[in-house]
Image 1 (cartoon, rainbow, N blue to C red):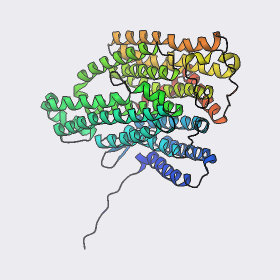
Image 2 (tube, rainbow, N blue to C red; image 1 turned 120 degrees about the horizontal axis):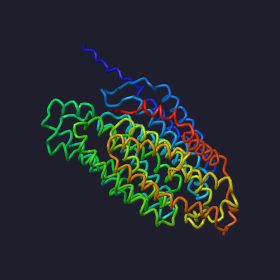
Image 3 (cartoon, helix red, strand yellow; image 1 turned 90 degrees about the vertical axis):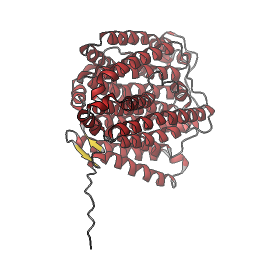
Image 4 (cartoon, helix red, strand yellow; image 1 turned 60 degrees about the horizontal axis):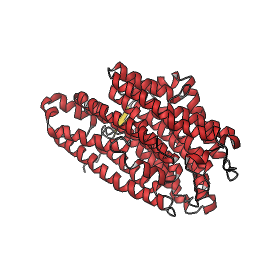
Length: 484
């Protein structure tokens, strides 16, 4: 009788994904038995899962491994991004319970969905096969479609979920078609093998199928990072989605898009670097400029931060265009910093809002510093960091992104980036002017300072200030994590 030998599979590279999946499925079962008024306990359990996944990431740092026939990898690049995803998920969970209770939509399915979305992001970062990247993208996308429309009683939330689903499905078609064409040109979906095949068969790099495949995949990833002209979904989805989910979408999924985008272009298409650098140059300028110009005219603070998010994707694309180690390290540092400052700002927005009336206009912050000086100071710190002012992490991140572009010879791109960053100061300062220089029109007596939200704000402030003053440790980690 013939013996069947099962292949030995090393699960270490996907251990964080396994932990989050197990916790997510367990929470779905526990949710059935937890009364509606005690759903916050599910959030605490999900935080335990995030901490456990974080421990496994720390243990894997500096120990490169691959598994599943080279379809997933554990390298510093993937682990750094996984840390960003876990941070984004953890901070989002801290601010979710307060908001969801207030709006009357604190269903327990929220927390497993956040964990599943985070697991999808991790697969995108560690996937070294186009199909693995696509699998992670779909797990992430389906979870986000539900999270965007989670408040079923709110028409804007319903609209956000529907718009995100329709446009996301359309962009996924571009991405998958690009993968199919790349497979047709090279005969493999393994990202490193694509580059090896092209190196051994030089004529493939001249194939229209190969070029179109790269362009279609770039279009799909550009949608995920909200790069212009694929940004149209962002303001409506950010405005309509529950505010904690807006915070989550602005940080984690954007970083996941950059992780997959960078691995695919840098590893699979090095022979086309001159072409994709030119493409990214145009995308970076369009994204920065469109995001900032439209943000200047926004009165709704969530829409303002949505267009700001588009502009920040443009800044990160500056480092990507540079195609050198300094620019790549700048992207990793910036994605981490952006998670702190953006989620922190949305935490303040949640506190200022009230049931059914989120007070999202900039004018609603008039006199906020008079009534809540500490929270106003925290908001000012986040806005200064978003504007790239020293001594904040946002300044250090932009400095390295633009320095990478200058070293690579993209001087005009760096100049355009600096000018865009200077223009963005206007709409960030506008919020601070209302907080500090306008007479209060509200007493803000409805605000309740949830301990979880306050903890999130404290972590975010520390995450913005410390790397801005002492950036060397995080920059060293980022430099050890680059693919170049």
